Image (cartoon, rainbow, N blue to C red; front, side, top):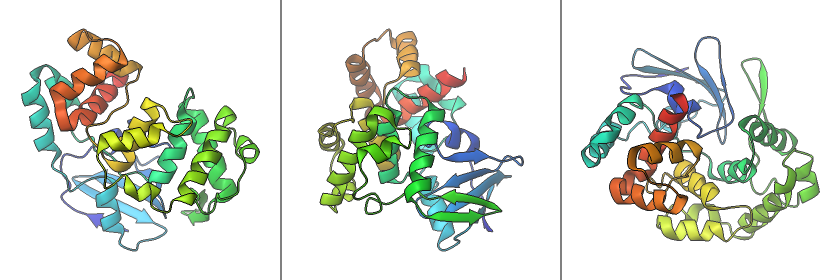
Length: 276
């Protein structure tokens, strides 16, 4: 067990459940068990302190701080957003403590390809099945969990085999992107070093990745905060706030107003709209 003290302005529940990740479970004590890239964690936030247990405690504090983006000053970002547009003050304040998670890029890419025209329970089921069939098993707190497989572990897996994991028509898209990533060892890492627009255009070249999926990948796995998905909730809020409709117009309006933090602003709108 690792205790990380004096973590202020953090809302664990909102951060975990706001649509960034799929594989988590809320426990009876209000803690969350989450499957990361290389380990399983159980995390509880109580009295400004984080209590973290894991099957692998190596550099656990550093892993948690990075995963939940706890070293970034979100109060500064929130202040900037409200200064740019005071009309979203209520939305920003309602999302105080919500952080942008640093997700495992490969799992994020596959998960959001699966997410196209799909429900959250179905996405989670498919990701779990891929992990159970091809990932490493971890025993933690009396339960078995499965890490998401690496690109190498999925090398050679065919579309028909993915279809057995309930991914439906997305089977061929997963097979193809796994091939792309295995053929270029730097594919995943490269997005950390190139700008958002270039990253966006590269992802859109791949079958099964449209604007919404590409945006989710770049925002949730690479923390490119000037990129954002546009969904039903966001469309509703942007219509109410600015009388702006259409995905293209929404993107232009958000970038014009919120600039480099437009992705965070839109995530706040999504969370606020869904909870409301």
